[in-house]
Length: 410
Image (cartoon, rainbow, N blue to C red; front, side):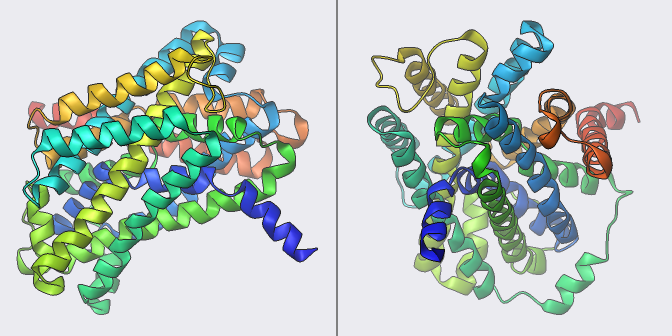
């Protein structure tokens, strides 16, 4: 009986882990690395605090999907009208395109470490991801995404070999220079790197497309909790690895290229090993996120416009779903090989994600209160806690959006 229950759990296991692997995408890797380089361990506490926060957000998306059997965009359309649905999906598409540019820029940056031209590495990535979706079912895409995403665990090994100082880490946990705009900008960027609009859309649609129901709520909550811990451990590992290298040898020095991050690790891991490990982690983070982001767009747009939208459908039965998925990949790839500065772009995209949080989290919270039947509706003390988190993170998002103008006016 115990063996059967474990097998049942593993069958439902997946959407949470995939979306959390995607959460630690190329942009998040760069943002965590920039945090460690500029501020050492002073943003370490924030990474720990974000574990329960990202779980709470994604658990609401899971609950909505399992109880209603509908995607996020579809529920917004039903309860708040087409206008809000299209507005929400429009912000989703902007966030997804920005994310895809960073994912493919991450692939290009990893390829350049070995002398591979960006058009080749990015082109191969687009081809691979297109084949994965066009020829597979939901389960096959999920398994491939987990396999690719697992390469991110390499960063745990990298952090261990960087030999961080426990005393310095503990000291960093208590140092929070929140009055400094540069610190707050990166703090908000880290929030935007962990709570992203496309995560909500993907997670809710994924549990529906997988065929899970409200009976699977407990297992999917465990899946989500496990993923939340994993994604933040990876973020912590990246921050710690860079803080123990660049942050130690050149404190306060900002990063400008992916090459700089890789070079920071090579004195401890060796030139060849360090470069290979970093490239594997970066490519894994980029590709799994590219899958999730493109699917989130294709699902979300379909939920609002009404076209067929499932990986269980053959491309001839749901052509627009697969076309939107592929067009997003191609658009992100073209913008990525234009030669943008990956580090600056990554941090800016995460800040943009944070600025969109009032819309994303506000609608998510209202749906959890309005769209769910009584036994599953968000209520009581937990509702107050989640509401407080929504307000605080939304205000931080607005701060991120307005801070450049505030500094300009000063």
